Image (cartoon, rainbow, N blue to C red; front, side, top):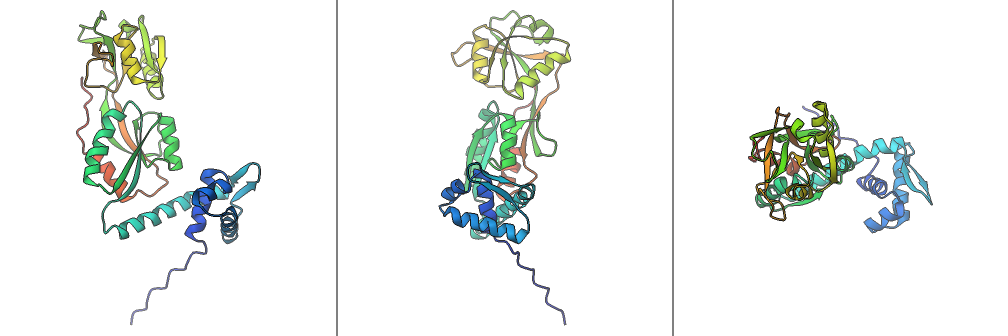
Length: 311
């Protein structure tokens, strides 16, 4: 006669207590978090106090004028709490959705990659899985890394530069940096250009990390110092100023049109000697479980025929 397996012991804490702690940590105040969840501040405070009692640890420091700050124990617990809450939410979706993929996915994207990356994800993947709610956030790479850590985005598409080593990633494609010139530039008819030929001209620098760091590293590797005339965080402003003849640009992302927004012609040239291609990756946090819907998005993105590294 086989014995029934021993029942799993019930945890002394509740999902509600974990959710209240996470909300208070995100907001920084109990009052603000309570207002967001539409409960009384006293109910939230009592739940967090009960959680501290169960855990036998002080999880946060509450100061009336300075809000709420997690203790080291609270920070450690919060990591596990977010994972448990995400898994509980996913369980509800899987069971309640009869196996269909549904729920929200927030996709972060570096702005210069957005015109290439987002359309097939939002349209083609959206048509395959209409019950998944896709939303986007464009930001610099340092911001996107922070957003992944905090849970504000689920996955992000970035250049493989300045990304923490522990971050999980999937390779999408690679591109090589190129020189962008006005059609009237003396080197516009050359099959390729050397940085040594450009360094005495004015550079229009895309000044947004990691693009600016990458551009400067190309010159540094050749022992060169470019003459920067203008800095801008806008990819299209770089193209517009270059097309007007105010300088040259060094860019990675390419667009299909050979004209600026104003209609002025541009030419794209290979850099010689060839520079190492830059990888474009989809990254996500290792500290959270990956829902099935997000795994499906990553797999879909890897199956797209993205641009190649060749001009």
